[in-house]
Image (cartoon, rainbow, N blue to C red):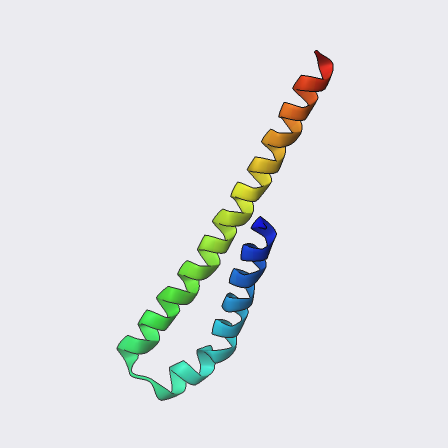
Length: 70
């Protein structure tokens, strides 16, 4: 389930990146700046989710190892 949301956000970032040249050409400066901020924020949020996913999996593996040893 967590990977579904990560994939959906990744797809959103790809679509936003595809529309970026259009936004820069046809929108005002403020709208282009806002678009850039949203794009950077989306990519940063995806990076945080990937890091959290890796941490959760690591903790799950450690918990499984601890219970199997006792």
